[in-house]
Amino acid sequence: EPEVTQTPSHQVTQMGQEVILRCVPISNHLYFYWYRQILGQKVEFLVSFYNNEISEKSEIFDDQFSVERPDGSNFTLKIRSTKLEDSAMYFCASKWVAGVADTQYFGPGTRLTVL
Amino acid sequence: AQSVTQPDIHITVSEGASLELRCNYSYGATPYLFWYVQSPGQGLQLLLKYFSGDTLVQGIKGFEAEFKRSQSSFNLRKPSVHWSDAAEYFCAVGAKGNSGYALNFGKGTSLLVTP
Image (cartoon, one colour):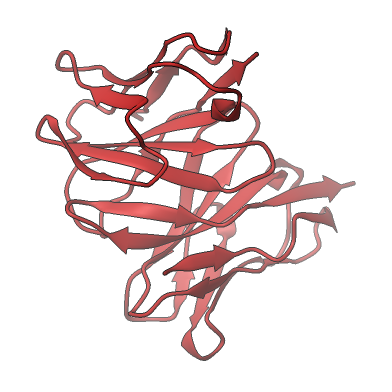
């Protein structure tokens, strides 16, 4: 069964450094998402992406964050200057079509630790 | 604003016993409700979803959930738990955005299954 993959599984970085989290969505999917989960808290929506542009973003997704689909397969989340509070598990998800009827498929997550 | 509450952070069940995980939502319109499961090292996997129609929804792995509008609940049930069901369970409500539906998650319930 096709699946969403994410790399790396764990990323450790120093505060102020830039990080790029990578995701390979399911190949025929058109809608892409990033979520995060801070330890002990709920999974939170960050951003959705369709047709090479952001379609929706949450309050968390400020100017320090950006997303990109640099080629036909990868979907990346960049954090420009990491803060301690960016430490979290980051999940990528994809789906085929718009609308609630379609399922979002999630990757295994990248654990980001900011020191 | 919509929200999802999972009142139980941890639940312990004996193998073979029945299971009910609670989920309450707050949403102004008809909600689109989901249950996801996350096993260690794995991504979030969809167990079942509710959009409309029959309020008792069947999912994978023998799970079912019942939508009760009067109680604003969407509790997940399984008649007989297996050791492999030990995982983190997330309830979520779909939020209509510009495209697709961003998911609004609860904090999750960690299920431990004892022999």
